[in-house]
Each structure stands twice: as C-alpha cells, then as structure tokens.
Figure 1 (cartoon, helix red, strand yellow):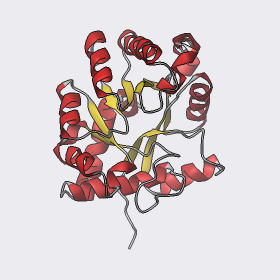
Figure 2 (cartoon, one colour):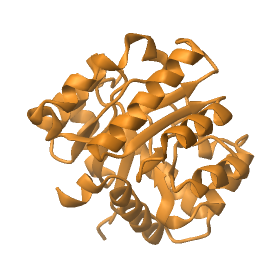
Figure 3 (cartoon, one colour):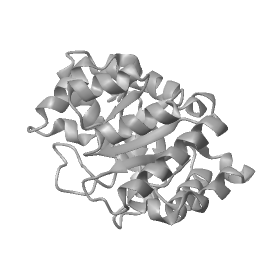
Figure 4 (cartoon, rainbow, N blue to C red):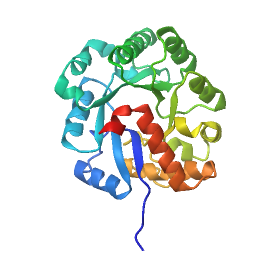
Length: 262
C-alpha cells in the first residue's frame, strides 16, 4: 500500500544555509515528505539575494526581502533595491524577517525599532505580507506595530509566546507560525498557545537549519522535518493529521497570497 503523505508548506526556512548538505538533496527530501512549498526567508542583503536566486531556480520555493533585527545596523537601504527590481520581485512573497531581538541585542534597540518600523511601512507600501521575528521583546514589538499599523497579513514566525502573547497577536489580526520548539517537553505555554490558535491563523515552519523538532533534535533542521511539527500539533489539538495539514496549507496561502496563485 502506498504511503500517502499529506501536503504541507514550510512557511519559514533558510535554504541558503543547509549546513553542508547539497541543496538538491534537501529539496528532494522535502518533496518526499510531502512539502509542496517553502518560504525561503532573507535576513540581510546577502541572504535576501541568495533566497531570491534559489527561488528563481526551484519550483515551489519563494523568497522574502528582509533585515533581521541582528542585522539592523546595516540599514534599510541595503534591501530596498530588491523591491525595485522586477526580476527579483517575481520571486518575492513578503517583507521580513523583521522585528526585535532583545535576547542578543546585536543591533541597538533604537536601531532595531527604526528598521522594524521601516519594514512595516514597506509592507504597507508594497502590499506585501510582513514576517516578524520577536524574542524577549513582546512589548516593544506590539508598540511599534500599533504605532505603524499592522499590515493586513502579518506572520509571527517561530512563535514562542504563551496564551497571552498569542491573543495579543491574534487580536491584531496576525497569523502564528509554530516551529519545532512546540515539540519540546518544556514548551508548555507554547503548546497551550498552539491549542487555542484558530485553524485559519495557524502556520507551521522549520526555521531550518535551526530548531530541529523532536525526534530530530540535535541535528541540523531541514524543511522535510516540518512533518514532525505537523504531526505533533495535530495530536496536541486532537485532530486528524490530514485535516490539520490541509488547514495549515490553506492558512499559509492566505498569509502569503502569492503561494495560492503560482
């Protein structure tokens, strides 16, 4: 009997960093695991360029244009040219990842705020979804979002909050994307958030090569492993995997409309 795997989308990965594994092998493994589309996320000028080039060369792979809070010191002008390049924009489905990281604070907080606000405005101006990275910075993130206006389609990638933070995001109309962290035994509050998130706002991701889920923890992550996240969250919500997978695909294409039209 043929093993029919449900179709899934990895809503956030970094395919320009495969930790030495051939990209073609990573993509083949993803296809074999039922991953039909992948959003390859830029973090600065170099990785945005790489994400666009990979998307151009591979069906079902899409790119974003973003300046990660770690890289905010480089300035928004380093990524805007991609948004003005029609060839690049043929591959681009969102702005980001953008936001705050006050755990490491590699860029000063005021610079992170300025660059985050600028990317929110780019999402508004270009009518593109916004992908948010926030770590140890919920209040700052919500303050800037509220001041600038939440883009129509906003995705909190690698959501790590609990129910209160989830409600704060959902009340602002955002989507929540759950990574392998949700499979960790210590992630009790995060698992509670995954239970309460409406199905039409729930995405799944790997954030590969980081944060491999149980049972792949401790090794480099890759898009194929998003299937473990799907199974875990489906079980957590007590719904069949096929129904959960279909709902996440629908929600992801609502969050990133370009995925639904390609």
